[in-house]
Image (cartoon, rainbow, N blue to C red; front, side, top):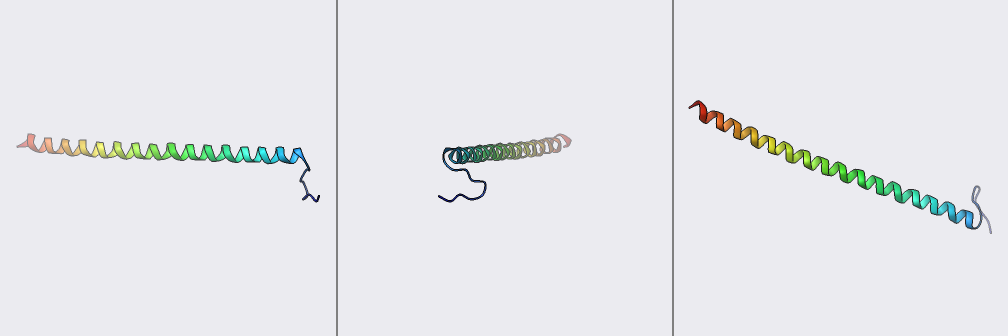
Length: 68
């Protein structure tokens, strides 16, 4: 059997493959979690901004009526 430079034969190589796969899975999970939190945060910010806009508009309307 021929091995590439740095490759170890047998169970040690399988262990390295498992470790690399585990690292990849963890990195992917962390990335997805960060993206989800970021997305949720942006959505919350949009809701807050639109709510504030509505409150400002209501305030302007109320002030206009009060002046009359």
